[in-house]
Amino acid sequence: MKSRSIKYKRILIKLSGEALQNPKDGAPLDTDVLNSAADQIAAVKAQGVQIAIVVGGGNIYRGLAGTESGIDRTTGDYMGMLATVINSLALQSALERKGVYTRVMTSIAMAAVAEPFIRRRAIRHLEKGRVVIFGAGTGNPFFTTDSAAALRASEIGADLLVKGTKVDGIYTADPMKDPAAKRFKTITYQQAISKRLRVMDTAAFSLCQENNIPIIVCNFFKKGELGRAIQGEAVGTLVRA
Image 1 (cartoon, rainbow, N blue to C red):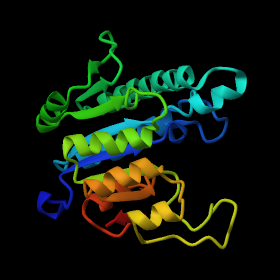
Image 2 (image 1 turned 60 degrees about the vertical axis):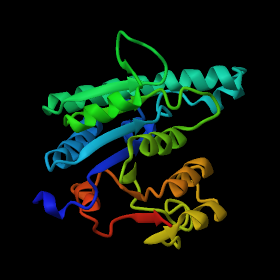
Image 3 (image 1 turned 180 degrees about the vertical axis):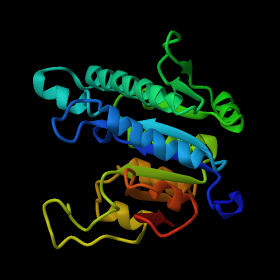
């Protein structure tokens, strides 16, 4: 595919932590899944697209769930941020095995394993052709990694936010539970918010709306899906103004 067919030149991919789990036994990180994700990213990167990534940490630890075991929400959220760094390093390793140069940048300083997030430096990495993985969310408790993805996409001037899932878009109900659920091809930010569609949180939808960043929700692990999305083909569900 020639570069002129690419609609989006700088994208941010949001991957949930659960997407990196072993689909059979639920192990937190699966080598085959990581390699599959790296293959998709490497293929699009080879077409000249600048790529940033935000990874969740729900496969390892979710702060909100920790409150049930007596851990206060703030502490639990910081533990969840550390989980996202583990996932970021795992994805970095998978990408670099494919020959893709990467940088992990975190909102919480941990100089031994990652660079601190500095907006201008992140953009410079992208311009030099490196994939930038943002770890540790926003660095603040009470904010999801969806919000972190929308924030970082806004800060780096992304043309598109891709919410990579194992489902092929946004549905009227959970398609795993309701066989009558129908997929939206296109939906507005306001509709997504008013219908309380839980694919992303309200803060993330609102921030993308304010900065006019379209969102594509698609099956990230379907071969070639990411490539079709950056060409502007109708894949998954498009959320826009």
